[in-house]
Amino acid sequence: MFQELLQGTGVLNLIKQVGRWLDQWQRAREAKPGQMLFMLGLLLVAIQISPYWYATRDGAEYVSVARSIGTEGEFNNYGSPRTKVPPVYPLLISPAWWTGERPWLAVSCIQAGWGLVLLAGTWWWFRRLIPDHAVTLTGITMVNASLWYYYARTLKEIVFLALLLSTLWAMQQLLNALNTKQKSSCRALCLRGLLSTSLLTLLCLTRYSAVVLSAGLGLVLLKQSWQSRTHWWRVVIVPALVSLVPCVAVYCYLSWDQQMAAVHGHGTYIAAWQEAGSTFVSRLNESLIRRTEDFGRVLLPGMFKSYSNQPTWFDWNMLIFIPTIIVVLYGWWRLFRTRDDLFVALFPFYLLLYLAWPYQQGTRFAVALLPLAFACYWTGCQRLLRFGPLALSLLFILHLAVSSSYWLFVERPRVAYEDRYWQEVDAISKHLPAEVLEQRDQIGVNRIPASLHSMLQVELDYRLYSFKDHPTFYSEANWMIQPVVYPHPGEFRTVYESYNFELLQRIKPDGELPDPGNARFDGLR
Image (cartoon, rainbow, N blue to C red; front, side, top):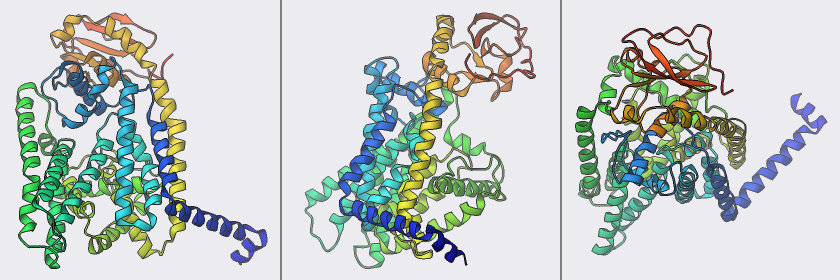
């Protein structure tokens, strides 16, 4: 009945024509990938290069370290030798500060360059793993909303993924040379091993979790040894030799970071893990929920912002997230059985590592595995649901529509609006006495926008504490920044007042922060 109705209105014929057109379009792109890759490269450059800084709390820390490297040749974070962040990413963007004090255009150009490296690496990997659909899967990965979100910010996700794919390429060359059916010279083996070790060291000092790559290498070699395709002793020797320098580098850097934390304060990753509280079972349950949400949000178009504030399985989003993760895991198993691929092999180790981290940090963990996630998702769907190439074309169009809409109507207008905060930042910084920063005086902020908070920290190169996150800090703070619409605390006097914010100095000890009541900061006037 329904099919007859569609035929009568011509809708069914239209659907078939659209389907045939999409199928032909994809086949043409796969046959001649150059045009598609060129357009993707132009798109990545176009959305990235801009004079704006997308302010975030973690991004401000990377900026502080990068500026210290670029201007002083030292690793300092807000004036402290305790950097807190891995060193490679801020080192890579530090040359931008040779061009000026706020080199956001130069930073965006560096980010765009790494975006192109990521595009090339993703294309190489898909062409090796799923050659029939490599271009379309590359396109789906590169127009993902989560990828664009972190691509625009001064965060390490894009550089990490680009370095990861470069390291995978180098290790794959090493594995090819170790194949018992080929005879490679000792010099070739040493060069490939040295390149793999060097890239893995950079990768681990970009994100410490990259150490799981050595476990993935061991798993691939173990599989090959089990199938009598390589010598058994390589299962231990090769991963140990490749990962020795990276592991020593990570250990030394984390030990130094631990010492700096003991002297200069601020927590470490180990301390944050210990402070998570709750029992092991509760922590594991929360992590499973978060990781399920992460992969569902990056894989399904339009679900980027869909997650529960409190981790729970009884959320409407889970009705589609749980089947999605089941399809991904099934697809991973099929790929692992049929391919000797390092990216596929490291997945369980990476997942286990982040199951031990029960914190919500957006989709950053899933973005680090984005090409693999789409490869597993496509493989699982293809086997379970008999999806054809048409589904990939539709998935590409939907992801592109969602990402471009979010970028055009949310991201870019918001950052252009927030860029106006720099006027307030300049005004406040001029009225803050220099000796306050030199003596490391205590400065707090009261309910100011998160972007302004980050901008002030970057401008002053100083860590400002929010009274919302640290309520007891109010009695210790000697200076305070808040919107002018909020009640004036009796323990402070006004030093400077702009249209939107005011700088206050303590004149009386202790006290309590006034309740804002109905006062709300609604935006710049």
